[in-house]
Length: 209
Image 1 (spheres, helix red, strand yellow):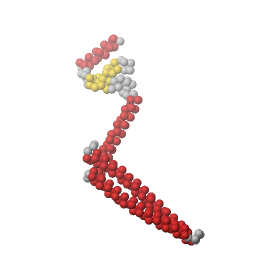
Image 2 (cartoon, helix red, strand yellow):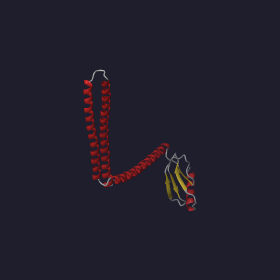
Image 3 (cartoon, one colour):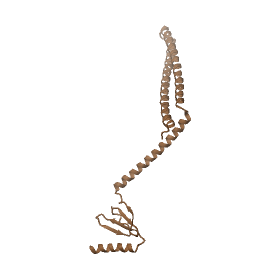
Image 4 (cartoon, helix red, strand yellow):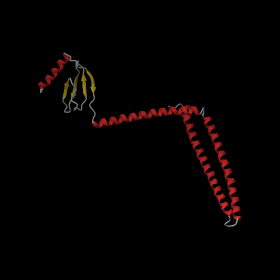
């Protein structure tokens, strides 16, 4: 065994005295034995590799190959990093588009509030007209009901009054549905303008990145 070690040491000294063009690899096998070679160690080794130049200087250290579990974990981390990068880039692009939209739509926060007031006045006027129309329809329905009560039972007038009342009921229902739609529209406008106001102040005025 000592002869073998002496031979290895002598070979290394000879290599240092007469440099060879190839790199020298130092590696330790799975049993802990140190090896020197002009070629990399077998792929079955799970140890790190040290690469020396022809003058015996350490050039680099090659890490030990990863286990299957480590390779799978590294691949998952790379994929997650790529997804995070893509998400960041999309968010940056979306923010730039949002800033452009806000700048084109509004010159200031006051302009947002002015738009809110105009929309509120318009919808309030629509609701008011609908309420007036419904009161007119209710009065007409009540007038026809009074006439129907005075009509003879089973006469043709009764059927006509019933048809007119049914039509008025349908119109009254449409007016009420219209006002509900207007209220929902107003709520949506408030929600959108509240968001526009927050984004305008945060992205445009404060320049948040």
